[in-house]
Image (cartoon, rainbow, N blue to C red):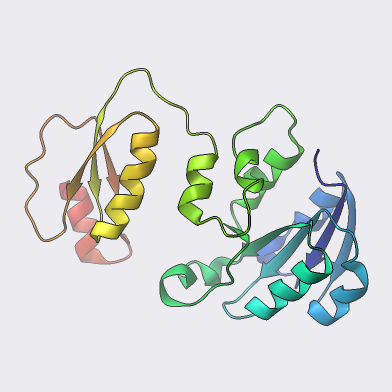
Length: 209
């Protein structure tokens, strides 16, 4: 059943989240609060609690846990703004929530109201302790009939392992291209590249690959 009551916490007027509140108002009952103190009176029986975070550090782990204690059956999510896109690598974002970025929320939230979709909706049903990789695998990756070899250029063995697990769940094989070694892969059907094209050296590497 899609959420009937949604609690929005944070600066919903920030440009990164434009359209979020009106979109939700068309589909369910919405209560908004600027911070956790203001949210307390509303956190009695929401089906979904959404924190919006314009900058890293605005949403603390204790804020998430306070809402969870007040509404233990509610699903918890954080929509992170453009300034938060490096937080997973450099910061300590709150755990135990479904995390998405400002440009992802239309597709990610739509799955909750689309009764015909059993893809990402599966990831929302997982317990709070589920890791991001587990949510990706639970989102119903479509399995191809033909097994393909995918070349993965990843920064580290950990990154490669996570990406390879998703590809294997879709029925494909993966081979790692390391940044420090010349590529000798032959016959790959596609390339999955991890990097930052804002850096000239990485942009040149991607063009070469």
